[in-house]
Amino acid sequence: MRAKVRAVGAQASGRTRRRTGLVAAGGVLVLAVTAACGSGGGGGTSGSGGFHPVKQTGGTLTVWVDSTRLPAAKLYQRQHPEVKMDIVTYDGDANGSNYLRTKVSLFNRTRKGWPDVVFSSQNNEATWAVQDGFAAPLNKGRIPASTLSGWAKGANAPCTVDGTLYCLRNDLSQAVLWYNEPLMKQWGYQVPRTWEEYQALGEKVATEHPGYLIGSAGDPWTPEVYMWASKCGANQVTGPKAVTVDTSGPNCTRMASLLDTLIKNKSMSLSSVFSSDFDKNKAGKVLMLAGPSWYGGSVFQGTFKTPAHQIAAAPLPQWSGDTAPSTGNVGGGTWLLSAHSANLKAATAFMTWVTTSNDYQGKTAPGYPAFQAAATAWLAQQASSGYYAGDITGTLQTAADQVWDGWGYGQFSQEAVWAATVTPKLTAGRTVTSLLPAWKDAIVNYARADGYKVAR
Image (tube, rainbow, N blue to C red; front, side, top):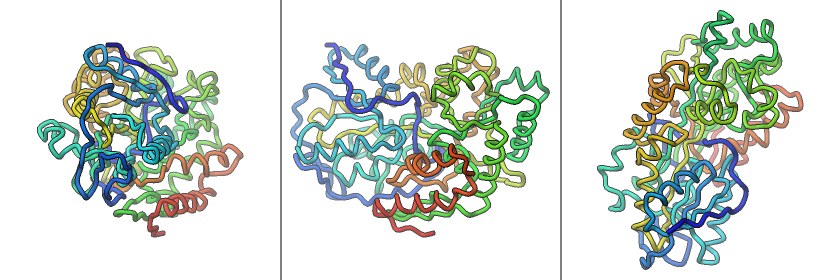
């Protein structure tokens, strides 16, 4: 049978990412949620009281995806024509839109409408999906332990509540330093190993090659690339509904100063890498771009149409004297199984396939798979593609284990906070340094609105 494909809500943005994720492969974080009995009504509750499935009647499998994951759902349908599917596209909760939770709340009130499987670009959906009775447990006999053990270390930590797994991580989004290798060689520049060298190079580029860029500070995930990598303590989730927020420490202020310097001399853009302005005026002027693993395929190859044999990847710079290398993480995304599904067998089969299959994750997925066997296949695919100027395998593998675990996954969206509080004022001429107090206050307000106890 052919799948029915339709769209709801806002269309997905061009980013793969995507948002707020935990440690890409290496850290463990206490999730900010205390499991509660499902509040959805209509059966299919999950939480501390156990999981009680609704009557299993089968039927059409309803899958919600963003536009980036749409090809995955279509591929599954082609490979499994016996499964009747209703594939729905939505914004994927990009940039913390909260669309999914809003719709689930409506479905909980009307007691109908829940999709069977959902992809979200957010890594923090379990912080509400469990307490709202939407997410079904996956490690209680639904998916074999032998399969679950295949995920990268720490990858599914954002999905784990009180020892129960409620979602599956789609991909890792560890940040690295992408750069144009031919230009670097032509101009006699060395890839910076420290942030101090990175800033010095930006000042040199601004003077010697004005108009060229070594970074962008115009996206909502800017703090996840720079502040997270700098070990800024703005988002330290310390326990269920507890967070420590400090934007005044040296790890925050020195990165803010670096950004201010490069923004002022225009070697760092204030346009989003997915904006029409960047695509038209800046895409061909990128010397370097710090960003997640999916930038290589989605941004350079896909959006910018950068020719082959130009883009290479290096480790993200570190501060001089720091002996514990760290990087940030921009998204990754998760798959959730609905506790209200009357088609759990088919839904689980799809979730397992879409997160582990080499046919999708290993061959065509835009980002670094969280499932280790698929990641190996994906890296081999990148190496054989002939697109990159050198092998990016080692750089991405190393960065996957260096995502700093001091940046948490609260229910609130750090991207939404930054986009509402910092980005507009940067565009208006303010500095990052001057906005650190306002950023802190905004995080505190967002966290408290979601019921967090905040230490400052």
